[in-house]
Image 1: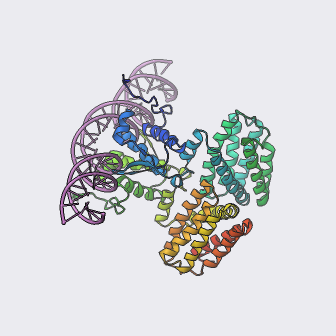
Image 2 (image 1 turned 45 degrees about the horizontal axis):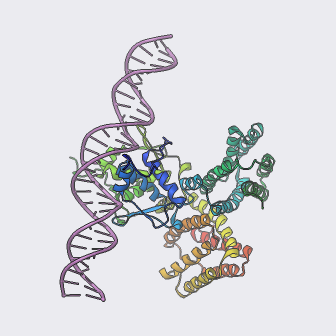
Image 3 (image 1 turned 135 degrees about the horizontal axis):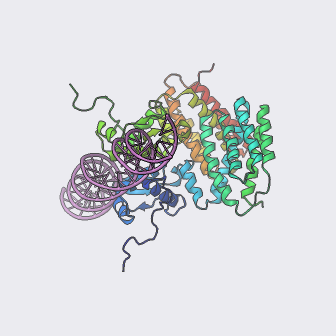
Length: 244
Length: 244
DNA sequence: ACCGGATAATAAGTATGACTAAATGCGTTG
DNA sequence: CAACGCATTTAGTCATACTTATTATCCGGT
């Protein structure tokens, strides 16, 4: 009458071995939370029950909860249990939370919000970078550009060069907060781009636009760099959203 | 010859009871890490040793480590131990990490970085808010402004009104990412302001400048709102940094 | 002398079970 | 009916045993 192991059929995803058990649990729960499978306010089953149902120890489960709590997704209190917090308290710009969000189908609103933020941050970062970049950094960006040209953006090497270009530009700002923030967002958005690439072919060669940006940074022309970066992001956005 | 309890004299700070033991440990270690007491790459003592030295269980210590790892401050691997990660991997915009940073004397560089980021984000947010704010939100901001005028900014009520004003403005952008980010930074910077207030009296009544911002938002005048917000932040910066 | 694979030592990871403490809610009592 | 206190529930903490991943070492082969 009852199956010998568990009932649901949804065991914990242990495919990524680099995450330990607690990491896998946190990831699974994290995705379930940000995708709305567990609504805010929902109190999840007690530690003992959850551990038993999933054939894991309380230890592993509790450590997973600590991770989620550290990212503002849940809140634990004695007797009350562990409940999903209001989304306004989530650390949505946390790298993991962002990754979990984009693991499933992220809402259009979430994508829009992120791109709006990118359009605020990255052009400003480009403008600052144009003023502060060192010669070494400029050379590095130039090299990355050559690599992008040599290998296409379809190849892993080309993609690495692209990432290198943007990372170096960010570092040139010298602003740790800016670097951290922009890197996080870029990483998250990259998944979307890769994900959506199945549907639509890249309609445009991004290399010339990168060159414009590079030249502006080379010239120390802040406003031009800002404009070039804005253009770049808008093109990326157009690639994702079907134009009209 | 040996003192009966521990040797160092630095026990774990349990003054904040809302944090559980693991939370207190995480906070203590977190502060030690971001203030550079433990340098990047440093491998901290093994779980058993640390637990024993501080008279806590491995469980509590491990949960603390999970919290720190969730914020990118440390990295644990079997046999290798738990080591402080490179600062470039820290989630420096995480609310807790930011709070821990400002717990001690934050470096001037950190403050500069944050204000530079504020100058990028908040004026842009104000511009967006000016275009999207609802009537209700506008009314709320107006009310907050009245409260600020009634009670002075020195009083808790006035400060609450100020916070209310800015929070409502942020919400008016409708951008969750923007709200989360700006709220986090504001909260962190508030400590600095409060902290520094001992040294210098508030040299200027911020109310008129708030009114300018409010009027711009009321008119739906984006550029004006942007400029007003920028002015506000620059004044805040001037309050902290001795002018010249 | 050097390379490479077995092996041992180490530290984190997981599991279990017992006990503590803090909320909450309920039931009793004034 | 309200306030108080107690019982219950659930997370928090502790202790211990055992497992697994990883690194370093050692040994033998080339």
